[in-house]
Image (cartoon, rainbow, N blue to C red; front, side, top):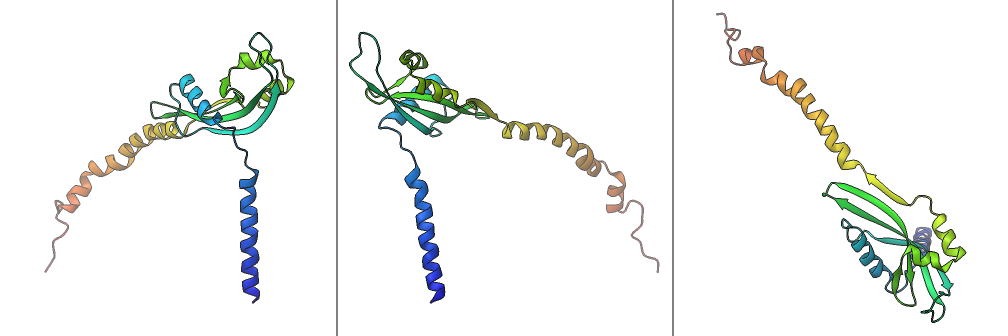
Length: 182
């Protein structure tokens, strides 16, 4: 009875704690992810499809100034994390802030966002100091290691086995060491 009760309590704990991450997840506004993918594919020729992750969403109501101003619009700022791949070897992890006009369903450039003169949007970009790109050096370092390891193997292991004349002479009984005395 105690074992069954313990198993039930553990199952309930896993269900509650496992669902907490799903409930806390932020969702992008409708169309933002597809529009961001299109923008990144146009901006980066080496954008790797399927690597886009949007996080840290902030919604701000702004009123555009000018002749085309029809009322307030909702701007969603997010952190976009994605990869670019060059020559199938050089991979880069990139992080950028992206701005989406949820009212009109289009991406906004940095100059359009700067024209709003909104402190919330200005501070949003400034809070991420780790933006930019980082090169993944795994493949490159392994290729460089091969440049050092292959010659070392050829010099110290393979070369000693191939050019060992005494080993050849012993294996083929050229010294006459395998005869018996009767």
